[in-house]
Image 1: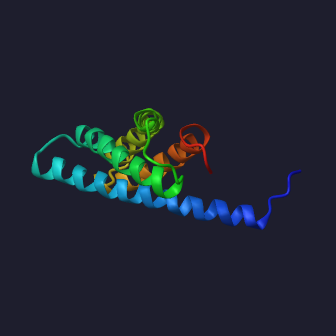
Image 2: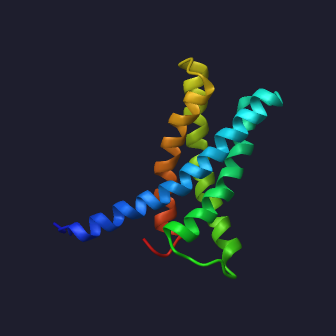
Length: 137
């Protein structure tokens, strides 16, 4: 059995907090765009969610790259963004299934459903980013 040192646990906890900041700010962009597209432009909430998701990916990637993973913008920027978008693409169906399930079948308000779906997507996305997108944890 591997013993986890307190120092490593503390380091990982603060890393998760820094990563969460990017996810929270990306999530804020997601919710603002979702609300704007759905309520003011009368897009269907699922279409709004898909558009908003990709906007949030761009915001969160840039914050995560610099703040959580302490990487510089370099020639590998587009490759990193592509990988980040792919992990987002893996998390997106989970996000949408939870969103649709809670909104359509459980009769939750679409914004409440989106919050819960975002938490489910966060878990999947973080695991993909740590294991594949970024070099440093």
